[in-house]
Every structure is written in structure tokens, then in C-alpha cells.
Image (cartoon, rainbow, N blue to C red; front, side, top):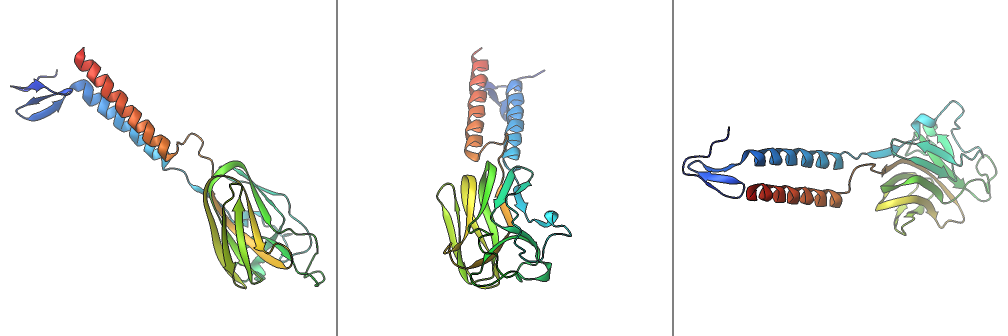
Length: 238
């Protein structure tokens, strides 16, 4: 049973007595419930993890070490949060180090005018390499390894881009911070002429099914606080 402190008076859903302000029993329960709900929401909002595609699990004994004119396009990969499709390149097992800065499995494209196969397969590979997402994603980064001194650019469906000059046999990462990305083009500039590059370690934040955006979380917490306050005041009046 709740007992009001000696000499106490009721103030704002509690009482002020000789020991200070003490919340009413119903208010205690409401505060506890609100705290649990807030913790669950904030925890869910912080649980989104980035997907990373490194192509390693796609390699087999038949994956070539270098371009052989066989286009792996479209190449569709299912991740934890999305279905991603790559177009324009070939899957290579670069353990021999042709792309010396990235001796792993990569997705690559080339065009070396004037050279015969196996050094060039005119019209087979594309520039740009395209990446399509079944469901819009937030944020995108890609590791590019360059075999020709070129400038590289990534652009998305929202019209944003990131550009960087990458020296010969060097790996660099380009990033887009957009939300709502459905496709990305990865280009060697200019898009005509000679190019030879590989992409790897594609990273993105998949669609957050059931997880609110930070602004939504803030509004929801404010709403819950307002509801708790109104309910408490109604109880006091009653």
C-alpha cells in the first residue's frame, strides 16, 4: 500500500514530503514502461549493419585468372538485405596478381584497343560497370583497382557522384552517402578509349525493414512522452 509521506502535498503526479518528491505508484509503472519502449526503439534503430560483397564465395575452379572474353553479366548476388545485380564485367580469380593491388576475386572490365586476345576482347566488356539494387539502399562504397592511369567516377540514380584519379596498379575507395540508391554506375573516364579496372568490397546499408529512420525515432519518442504526460494528468484530475 502506498502511504503519503508525513506533511506531504501532491505535486505533478507525485507528492512532496519530508523526504522530497515521490512519484505516485501509477506514475512509476508508466515511467518504467516508457523507458522499456524507448530502449527497444533506440536499440532497433542502431542494429542496421552494412552488407559487403567481396565476390570470394563466387569463385570456383573454372573462374579464370584473367580476361577470357566470357562476360559474367548479369551477375546476381543475394545478400542479407537485398538482391544486387552487376553488369558489364567478368568475375576473375586474381590470385596470380594481374591486378597486383588486389589479389582476390574481383569483378573486372577492360578495353585495350589495338591489342589481340587474350589481351583484349573488343566490344565484350562495358564501361561503366553497373550495380543495380532490387530494393533501395543507403550509402554505397566500392574499392577500385586500376591497371591504367585513369580518373574514376561513381554516380547514382539521385544524380550524385564521387570522382578520383587512381594511379596505375593502385586501389582506392569511392563513396556515396545518399539514401534511396537503386543503381550505381562505376566508370573509367573517359568512358571511351582504353580502360582496365576491377571492383571489389562493395558496401551498402540495406533496406531497414521495420527499423525507423532516426527522425522517425525521435518523433515517436516525443509522442510517447506526450501520451504519458497526458495520461498522468488525467489520472491526477480523476
